[in-house]
Image (cartoon, rainbow, N blue to C red; front, side, top):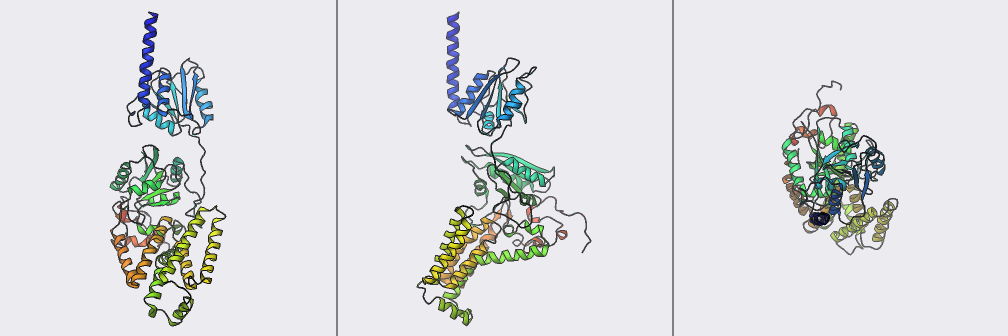
Length: 512
């Protein structure tokens, strides 16, 4: 009988080892139907088989006061060890405790191996007890993270100073802090076959257009990639026209900006591991608007908006206009200015197109170099490098003094855009319009403007025309386009987003 029992035990262990080996060779997709057993050691082996030889997977075995074998499984560095020792293990080792009543914070229970592995990789500690088929998932996340700081790319003179960080729950809390509305909905999604990146889709029920919300969710669900390391992955994969240089989804570091757009019926997308949230849909006008426009008085905000529009126009058109006037239409320039420009170009051996391309490329190289250098050094090197290169080029007779001024004003104008992605699009388009101006003069510039306007009018962002409220024309939406009318006159939300609740201000303010 003893020999028979030993042979049966060996066969059982062999079958278990074979099963564990099969589980180890399966991917996360194929273990979705695998469940735990009631044996704690078998369950530990099932979990370890999924991670393979992983030295940072910690298994802490202990015995409860009821003599039941138990274990805590977690990844070192992703959990708070004090929470595990003081609140879970200590509670489990106190008298009168059974596996039906474990003490933990944010407890979830499951017997699915896939869900257990997913939670371990997210920073949870999994409690396994002998005799119980279910595992207890404890939220013990405790890795080091960056605190809430001022946004680096969207600084304002007047306005909140807190910005998103790399932790998803903190970013969602920053929005909840400002938007205390129970109708705020948060849809949790996981994208990335290997990174398993958490994503929150946020919208206000009763304001956002339901088909638009479902379209955003459907596009995110259709993303099938191995990794999502930043919100830019999602932005590029769900936008309507992927070959367009213009951004069709806005990214931001500011929670107040996301809240303001949620109140207009848009959808916010937060991605774990990045301080940049996404706003969809997006229209062209919002890329030269800043949250600061609504914190200042309306005439100050209107003046600043006109300055931004002029700056963007200068950043796009000024070099090409110089090339067109100097090469094809000198008769349109005042005589004294023509003489001064001719005197400055007397020693330049290149045509104005080559001269402009040389200076623009030099400025772009200096700008990129200043971004990559350490913080205190970068701006200094950028300014000094631009001065040295410009002065040296003029002294050597490679470029004219007027061209240096043109390029400097163009560069300064590109910095006036509140949106970095929109400013990059302008910088990209500056080069083709320069070539057209060098070949056809003002006719080439006008051809470029017509093509760009046609392209912008054809764009849509989740069904919303990109040039709204200009095309199609919506007079009510013009209140917040080039000018920013007083708050008491903006009583309704923008109609272009098909909002359900159109009223923004319900009480009449009779003050003048």
